[in-house]
Image (cartoon, rainbow, N blue to C red; front, side, top):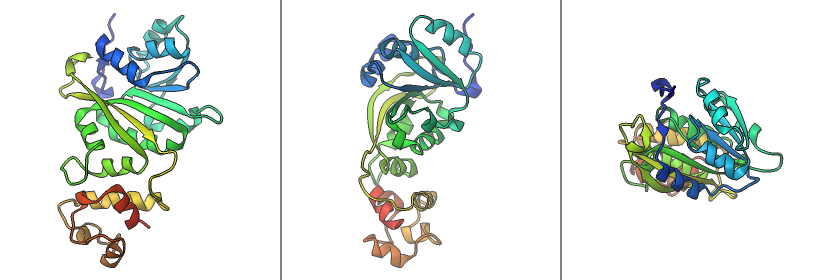
Length: 255
């Protein structure tokens, strides 16, 4: 019996073998690496990853797909399935002692941004991340300052990792076809941050505050967080708008 994708889990199962091949080539998994897949579904990526690496940990919320995935993985390697919500999973606890893990997955569109922020909290334990996401989200992740796509997500990611969009994926590659185009993206956490952020919580508050009022000038958007004198001291014009500042500019504002 074919598993029926569940809307509440944001399930769209990948089935296009050409796309799967491109994804595997981009990830380039090697034997002995510690891979964690988010939302394996029915195993379109899990099974070839398992065959190449010999072992794979998968985090799956939908308990009904797990028996099908386990059956399909039989004889292909060691598949360790954690039945849990990835948003509530301690990623750091899954990393091998003294090593780092690689994250892969087809992230549910309805919670993709919260998941990205959650994974960033554990960035020091992650070598790289390869995700399928809504193309609109990837455009925002990799946007340059000044455009409408540039925002809080762009800045928060830029402070912790490089973002490299790899290729787009049409809706026909999934069952059921989503109503949006998808993209495959690579994120690599910085071994050495490109600029210092002494207080990450304050940095996050300032970025969030600025983009909550992106149509306002910086002096008005950050009222109550950073005064005009401090903005000028950071070498920034208080009359500029939030979307024109780089991630490094926001880092200076948060010191």
